[in-house]
Amino acid sequence: MYNDIIIDNFSHPEFVGDLESADHQFEIGNPVCGDRIQMQVSLDGDSILDSRFRAWGCATSVAAANVFCRSIIGKSFAEVSARQTAEISAMLGELEPSQQHCVNILNELHRELSLAVSLEEG
Amino acid sequence: MELYRTLEQAGLDPIKVALSSVGQLYAMSEIDLLSFKHSLVVESFEFHYQNNTFFRNACEARGITPTQILCTDDLIKIPLLPIHLFKANDSHKLLSKSLNTIELEMRSTGTSGIPSVSRRCSDTVDNAILGIYAMYREFLKLSKGAGLYLCPSTEEIPEMGMIKALNLLSGLLDTHKFMVKNETFAPEDALEQLQGWGGRFDRHIIGPPFLINRFIRYLKATNTRLKLDKNTLVITLGGWKRFNGEMMSRAEFNQECIEYLGVRAEQIRDIYALVESNVIAIDDENGVKHVSPFVHFSVRDPKNLDKEVKVGDIGQLAILDPLSRSTPGFILTEDLIRLLPKTDESGRSGQRMQYVMRLPESKEFGCCAVNLDKRLDDVEAERDNACPIVS
Image 1 (cartoon, each protein chain N blue to C red):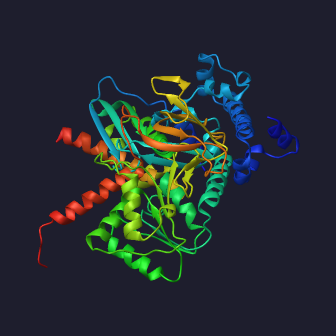
Image 2 (tube, rainbow over the protein chains, first blue to last red):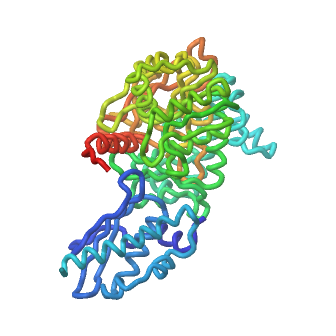
Image 3 (cartoon, each protein chain N blue to C red):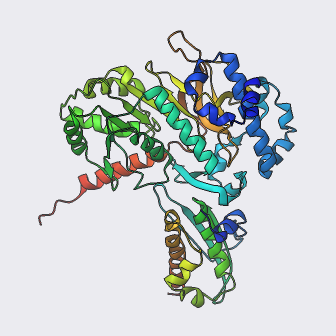
């Protein structure tokens, strides 16, 4: 049911926790019954210095939050913002239909990050 | 212990035998049933102790090993997982098997909005399905008829435990229809559907109490009194507390079912279940809930959780569920219940329970039904307050 990316990131979620000082934080989720992720990000100029999350929900959504943190740390904001949908989908590997909503979660995390940073810059 | 060993030596899985022998287990003497349950729980404890580092550490911290659970009085020594751990960020530590063995994730969400997620491997899914169906057959005896589901479909919310459990009933029926769609419920459509099935099927009404209550409120408002069928069942599952904190009265609910649905009291059956456990307790024809005979309820003193309260006294429910293989089934719930003494009319051995309320200090209440209740109220309020626009 779960591919190796999901198993590894769910079973060893190395980025769970809180940052001492976050430049941006945002939350995504379904208010009724769905998954919920709180994300914190700190920046160093144009680069993403660090990121932590707290997630509640299915294993794939928890894994998606961990994948997101790992994928953005040390990258420039421009590089992360330039990711296309296909590239984002591939980050979680092959998913079953019941897990596909986590691709949306990962897309939403990218969108929220862009929004948070753009608002500050704007 | 003797029965357990006999089954094991014959090459049978004692759990699977238990799951297909609900009637026979209820017919055992109290002492034999308790002894058999003890064996099932001890084997399960041994399994999780050997395979779950987090659980084993908790056992070692308390100096408990499986060899110390020698008799039924020792069951109280088994460490319990507080139910909030199923909501935790690091709920992966609850797994006694690798994530790649997990077949099904189910969830429930109370007023906090944080989902409690339970993960079941194939073996646990087998046990849960067999156990639930066995209990449905034992107490509801459904094999035909039409089910009016006053709740959303599993297609809309496939992972919700309550809906999943109720949806299992649909396979026993000839037809069924879910009446909550896209977070809206039109009671007039439900009434039309019931009338359409009249004279063709035994009509059953299935759903969380507050939604059936909504339907009854509509019948009251339109002064409509139905006369459902002699084999009709009104089956409820889910909390009795509304999202606004208002507690629904079971007695009042029953009386209104009798008055507006035209059923007898024994046709109204409530079910107690938890998504984190595989137990199910169903009302018999006298309105007494019987606990699955392969699961053990231990009712604790909330002020001293190492102590059980007497039968009849209210306490905090601890569940010892040997059906669960993917996570330890030893759970401290936040529900206050009382175990009921056996009466002459009950006819079954095993435990009988009465749900009292959620623990007052519990940070939240409700299951997914409570959020649905709120959503339906919000949608209705939006509709009622909408500015009329001529188009």
